[in-house]
Image: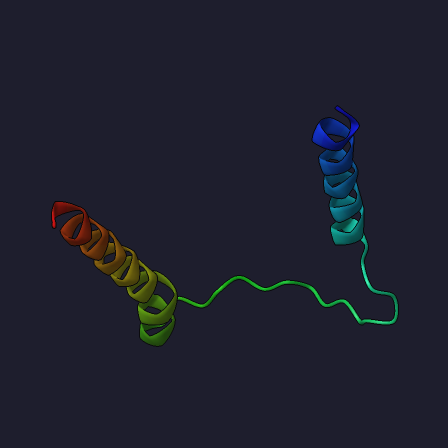
Length: 65
């Protein structure tokens, strides 16, 4: 029972704590919004959508076989 519940919970808590730490000595800048020029629209909006559609199409085609 200890293995089933305690160890996964301990790993999750350790992972959350390690992810939440910020590195010291790294300069922080003010985040700027994404400029909506043609290149950024294609790379950050259109290309991921095309990749998702292709992935879903391959999964459906593979499932039909």
